[in-house]
Image 1 (cartoon, rainbow, N blue to C red):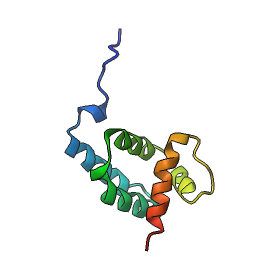
Image 2 (tube, rainbow, N blue to C red):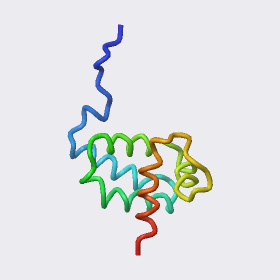
Image 3 (cartoon, rainbow, N blue to C red):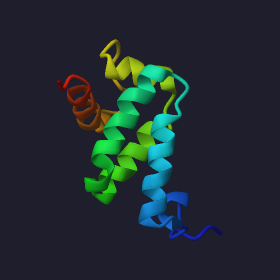
Image 4 (cartoon, rainbow, N blue to C red):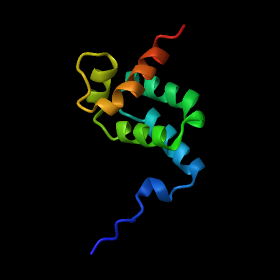
Length: 97
């Protein structure tokens, strides 16, 4: 029988290791355009994110790169409404002078 308090891989990482992993994953997507947006955003904002925001960012980075790009460029809407606030912040970051 599985224990309900089983730790997820993210919960076993130290905070610094978690940030390092997120930074790496945000910069190594496979699509340079997505790398620039996600990587740049994460470089600027990861340190200030709360645990819930980090978890949301981790979940987003698990999605397919083409889907993320489509959501960021608003060619399609994310099927997960919980991503929308983060995607909106990333879009705003992308358009900053």
